[in-house]
Image 1 (cartoon, rainbow, N blue to C red):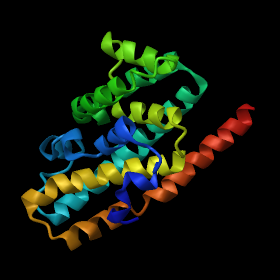
Image 2: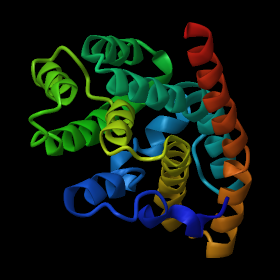
Image 3: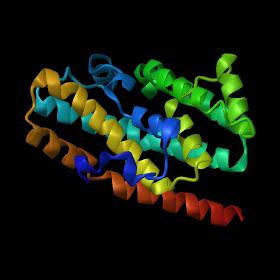
Length: 219
């Protein structure tokens, strides 16, 4: 997995306009919590060089991305496909109670609400409208991971590529936010990204295989 693969074209070349803009928001440095907040929340020291940045990225990957965010996207996708608005709101509240996401909450809500607001024109999509109302009424948080899962379902985008795309964009966003202040050479950043992102495809495959097996058992 390399950084040049981050283009939205690889996930959804047919998307245009606001749909593409929603994808572009994912992983942008402005959409992520500041490293000064995120690092201590994950039990890491302040990021001050390439080595400490790598340790932070691995901690984020192991404590948040793989065990929390990717399963949340997958669950939201399933709820959206089945039209389960009530279950989606319940999942939103469950994430709000997860201490691992405490420092990620404000940044996630800011992006999630912007993304969800841009889905407002989908008047015929009851789940989108009900989730949007729940967020506006303060009944739900509006996590960007859940909105992204709904987005994948609404636009019938490939789920595996979507999970990989989210992982890439978010890891790269943290890397980009630190690269300027640390003055990291491009080659160092590329190497860091490749090392940290390497385990993600196997985990995504495992998540999808587990979901498929669960669906078969339920059937």
